[in-house]
Image (cartoon, rainbow, N blue to C red; front, side):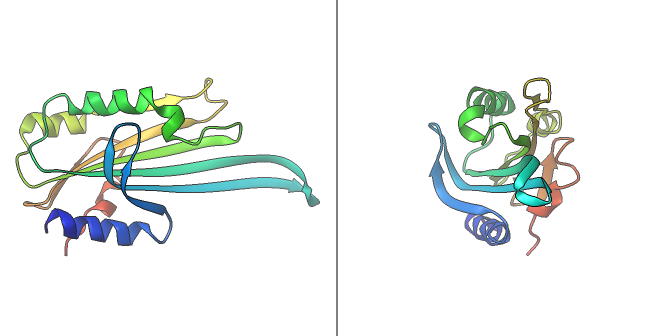
Length: 167
């Protein structure tokens, strides 16, 4: 599978639940696909006018194909980018409960053991106001399109497979 086929399959799989944008530029970084899903839940007393509480859960996908090999230290750059731009990337407000960020890279070969190890050890979890304003967690997913192998961090282990298309 090449990067254009992967991009098309990812877009098709996300469109049912996510708002999808192609070739989106966000804070000096261009992504092949940017997608977001927002859910708001509320508890009412007798009528919708008497709302007791509400909370929002969000999920984001940032996808980019890398033409050249991934360089050492790329995970540190991802972490800095997200932490330095959290307010612009996430929809944080008083009802925010959780945000999941999926950072997906595809590459056609060139993954070294060092890059695989860096991917697997990536961790980015953050509480907002000691958890009273929710939290965010990040999945890092690197896919080698030549070998159809997927590498994820610990948080992405369970759900990372849904981003691997075998045909």
